[in-house]
Image 1: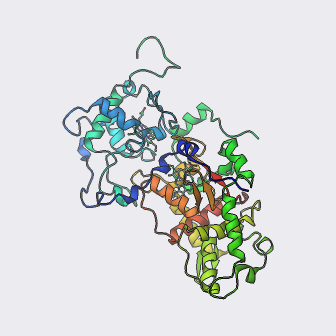
Image 2 (image 1 turned 180 degrees about the vertical axis):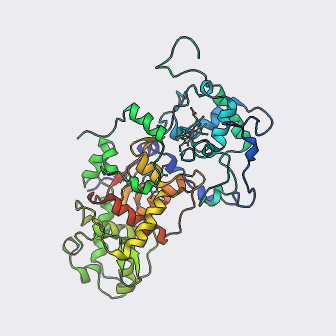
Image 3 (image 1 turned 90 degrees about the vertical axis):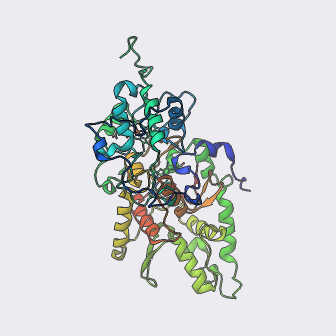
Length: 175
Length: 262
C-alpha cells in the first residue's frame, strides 16, 4: 500500500521565489497604461549614483529592513545573504549585503536598486524602480515598479546603516 | 556518490564578477544532473520506494483507466495497444514528437488526450485533471530508467529553436530568464530552494508543495509566475516548444516518472 501524501512542514520549508502563489490572480491589479515611462528621469543619474531622494525625503531604515527581509516584497534574501540572524534560508546568488553601507554611499546604493542595468547590462539583479526593457510582465505587475519611490528610499536608508563588516573577517578597527 | 553541494568560495566570486554568459541557451550544463540528486536523502528514498511514493497512487489509477472501456463503446486503451508494459515501453522518452495530423509538435499528454477524443469518442480532459495526469504517469512509468531520447525529426527544429530562445529570454517584472537560474546558477540557493538544472525527467510528478501530482506545464507556469511573467495559456505551443528544448537539453538522463520533488 502506498503511503498517504506527505504533508506540511517539509513543503513549507522550501517555499522560494518560485513558490509565491497566485500573483496573477489579484483582481483589479494595476494595469499597463496607468504609469508609463521610466519613473526616474535619466538626468537624475550622475556618474554611478542618483544623488537626490526619489521622494524628496529621507527613508525610514526600520521600514526598509522589513522590506528587505520580506520575501514577497523586497525579495532580496532570495538572492542575497545579510545580517538577518532571524531569517533562515538566505540566498547565495549575489554578494552578501553585510557592510554594504560602508562600501557604497547612499546615492550609489540608490542607483543600484533603481536600475542596476545602467552599470551592468548583464546584471541579474532586478531593476526595482524601472518600467523599461521588460518583457511579458505578468498582468498583476504591469505598469508599476517592483517597489515604489517611498519603499526605495526606506531600503536605501536601511542599507546605509549596514556598516559592520562580516563577523568572520571582523577587524577590531572600523573601516 | 559525492554531491555537488560545495561551491568553492573563490569560484563563486569569480562567477559573480564575470556575470552570465551571453546567449545563455548554449550554456546548458554539460554534466547533466537530475533534480533528484539535489534532494534530501529522505525524499530520494521516498521516490525510490514505490510503496512510499505517493505518485504511485496516480499510476494505479492510470492503470485502471488504461484497461477500462469508455462509455462510448469504443475500445479501451488496452484494446488498441495491448499491455502498456509492452506497447508503451520507451514512448515517453521520445516526446514531444511530431504530430502528422495537426502538423505540429505534440507532447505526451496531448497525444493521450488526442487518442481519447478521436479513437474513444471522449470529451477533452481538462489540463491538470486527475485522469489525464494518471494516464500520463502510467504511460511514462513504462519508460522509467530509459534515457530521454528526443526525436531527431527535422520538422521539430523550428519549435526546438523557439524553445531554446524562450529559455534564454528575460521575462517578467524581475527580468530573469530560465537560463539565468538553470544554466548559470543551478546548485545555488534561491532562498530556501536549491536551484536544479531544470530537467523534465520526472513528470508528471508528486510535489510536496503542491500536495499533488502535477504536469511539466504546471512546473513551467510556476517558474514563470515566480519571474512575475505572464504565464502562457494552458496548452499553448510555447510550452510544447519549451518542453522540446528541455528534452533535448536533458538527454540522455533517465526518465524518473513518477518523481518526487520538494
